[in-house]
Image (cartoon, rainbow, N blue to C red; front, side):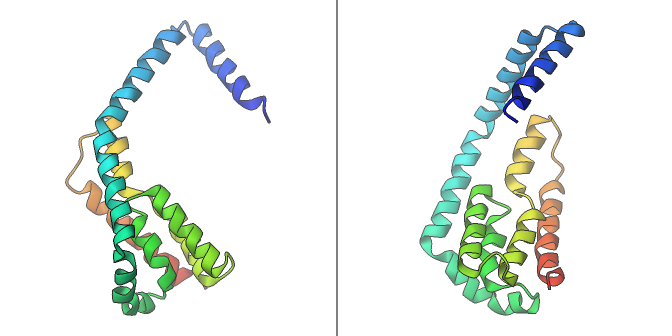
Length: 165
């Protein structure tokens, strides 16, 4: 499989040459756009990472788990999955760490492990995705974009608790 990436790169170069596209110039233009996008979203990413780390370090996660325990039981969501549920819309890496914690604590075949896995697969890092992909694509953000994405995240999280036996 080590030949797949070089073969794909050569195929793209050949297609560009065959179609008479200035491949190197197109590459440089794409790199410039990528750097501009990174420069635009970097402050928001730094702020988000600091907020997530402060949230975890302050102990608010444990307090929210205790506060939300009755609602979680009503939705058939294991209490161990709440940190994942709360972190998933904000940070992909923090939610991966929360998933790993659930899997290490409860096991991958436990109900909590299965619910956490479904939660992770059925939702997206909402704020990052909306911020990066919409601005990179030049799409004008609607005032409904983030609320609808958060509603989808909530529906996926609740469905995970209701559908996993």
